[in-house]
Image (cartoon, rainbow, N blue to C red; front, side, top):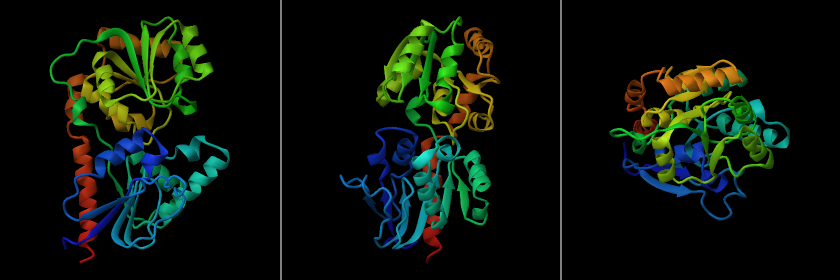
Length: 325
């Protein structure tokens, strides 16, 4: 490959969200490129205004963090994370998102899907893209989450990570957590509590802590002291907290869904229904240690780090750029 190949990486996601799965993804896969010159864009104060506007700057390869195309690039890459808007959002926001995503996929030379679930959804919703060059490159977990030695867990202390609305089933989880051994729940991300969420939490009698903008250091601390992770979402493109739980060697309670089984590789306490008996049984399994081997889950996560995912991304870049010579 010629050393003068130019890559432009579009950091627009950082103007759209303070934290979240896509930001974590982009931060980890877009660094340490040493085989081409790299230019970054998308961080200006006006970038959020131009989130729907395509770029037009000459380069060999352009990869946007969020559905933008560079008309002057020889190669465009789009990463598809999920189809939450298509499945769960309505109104104008859904229409705008679908249009932007579709246009990006349509005009890209390479599509990266973060899971097999996302690739299936893409081809189910848009079978016209069956001939597109699509690769599945899974998300990863940061090395910091791997636990060395033992950690002091607090019995009855649960952890919940991420947004809490709708398909996330947070409200159903709360209603089902009454009369269980769950005593305290730490809520990470998802913004401040709504009035309804606060009322529902107080109705359960649970103690709770809220960390709307949680630092990495605090998140690591929570993974080391909580007894389990509760992640009852009906749908995700991937579900990074599952790998974080595996690396931290804590059990994770999951809704029995295809996406969850794929991401967890079967290492999870699966519930079929969002009812009190199901949650109570799952939490009981945590308390008595009747669950999958945490060491095996952690060992598997070792092969699913961000370093591994990043190298797969870089190899895609190298292959595409190499094919140009």
